[in-house]
Amino acid sequence: MTWTRVYNLPEGYMKPWLAFGIVEFPHGLRAAGQIDNEEIAVGMKLKAAVGVVKEGLNQDYYGFIFKPVE
Picture 1 (spheres, helix red, strand yellow):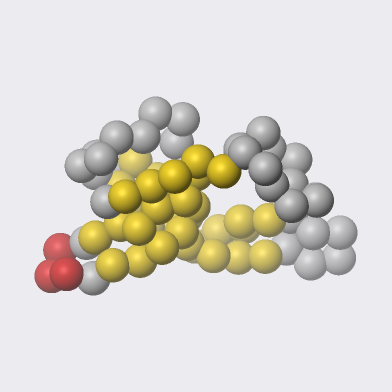
Picture 2 (cartoon, one colour; picture 1 turned 90 degrees about the horizontal axis):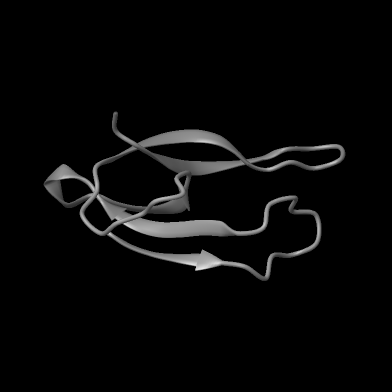
């Protein structure tokens, strides 16, 4: 996994930052998306979900969100 935290977000985001990463799953599958966790470390176990990545006035936008495995 590799990741970055973006602080200069486009207009409309209500968060101070977003984390994005490229996650590699078993059998070599790789996916890019947001990481929903404050503490991020290379090698941590994540699960993928589809959820709202940006709330809009008339439309929400969906994409991959990676969350830690508990």
